Length: 287
Image (cartoon, rainbow, N blue to C red; front, side, top):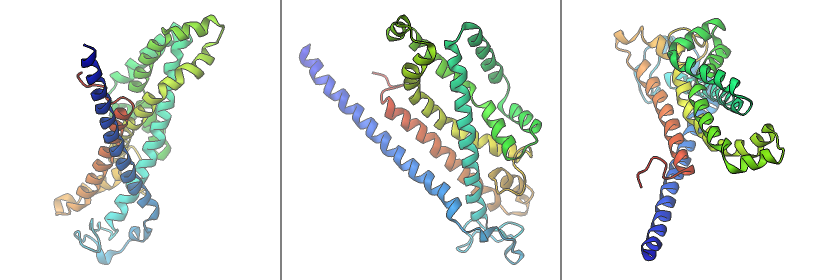
């Protein structure tokens, strides 16, 4: 029996290291790809956004890889600028949403009344379709950049808050928490020194996985006309404008921006899943 255990443990450690190394490699590649996508929005020349009727409605070519629109604007430049804008909108919205989820989940430590209130709030937001809540909040705030960010932030925190709340409930019953309470430590001190360090991996991964949802929903409400203004080169605006020209055979106006948006979302989703494997290589695996 001892020999069997001694053979099994090194094999398990080796498998864990390999899974973690592979996940870390994919995470680094994902970060590099995202930096290229987002960095291009700052480095690329804005000359392609200038109206040029001589090159209007041009199909994809070497000079214009994504073609041009009805105003002669380069679709590659517009798409890259739109992705960069979507990235920053998603980043800020996901960050605010993560902060909301963390604060509300920590109310469990205060008293049961506040915890019940938070639980009811989570159920309420989860019971309302995302797109409906997004449109209502964005419309009440007058749309625009800040309206979209606040709308996305206020509708994406419930799932992460429920996850963090479950983690806090487990930690709260731990022995070291009981010892700290008997030593006279406040819940604020316990949250700062014991609970927050434990929640950081879940919070970070939740933030990363929230990112693609924030980007897609920003594009969705912008596409429907309740989001960013038409002057901004957002992906939702680009796709919305392209709908009127698809029947004319100008397929490149929607295909390339849509594909680039899906690539960014897929990279973020893959990054979050691989980071989860880095923190816990055997989570969700059958032993």
